[in-house]
Length: 250
Ligand SMILES: Nc1ncnc2c1ncn2[C@@H]1O[C@H](COP(=O)(O)OP(=O)(O)OP(=O)(O)O)[C@@H](O)[C@H]1O
Ligand SMILES: [Mg+2]
Image 1 (cartoon, helix red, strand yellow):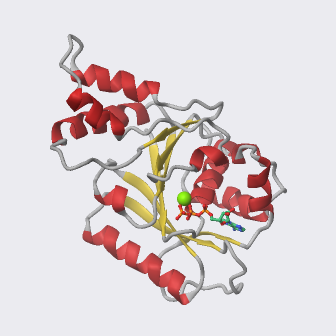
Image 2 (spheres, rainbow, N blue to C red):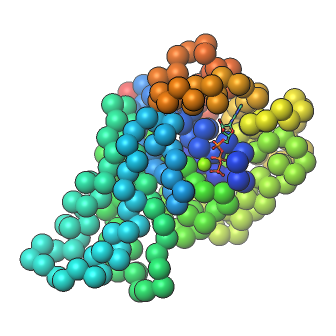
């Protein structure tokens, strides 16, 4: 079974960084191969994984609708094209969703695309989805079941109320979420307060403002290669993940 983890939160709170650190933690606890999904139209997760920027899957819709029908069935062409657009890594592969659809009628292609992505995901032990700010991608039901919804928030009252709003939206949309988590992150020197402001969410981990995070990013090396002990934030996620997300080695 593939475990699906979706990471969401408000703009700039550290979603992409936390997605990369979650992938690192999963890999370190023996969960591999991994698939990273960049669901932000302004894709940048590839930079933290030191992978080539994958071509977004979204543009496939227009291309398929414009193309003349050929001998190969559309479903097979989509599957081949999805496979072609995978950016392959040693431990984690990456796909990018690209932009949403235009004003045309894409239900048919969308359904086929969704099926193709689901089949691709089935080949991995775990999938980590890095979202744009908000719930756009998740609310468009572009994903199947989500085992863990990780809501990243800074520990300020405004940061926590943004997390509460996302948690409520996930409930309103009846997203198929197994378990929702709060991941406290301080991408800037926010006061080092503990507590969740009354949020009824379990805390996955609490990350400090950690200069080694932007420092490692500046090297251009993959966050998957960040050594143990080099970053308090990375170590905090690595310590939490195997127990919390249920990741014992096979
Ligand atoms: N715990 C941390 N300590 C220090 N810096 C951090 C921490 N977490 C994230 N950052 C830095 O904060 C910045 C924003 O992080 P990131 O890009 O992961 O946020 P995001 O939520 O994905 O943003 P966007 O909404 O634009 O997608 C980056 O420069 C990153 O290095
Ligand atoms: Mg991001």
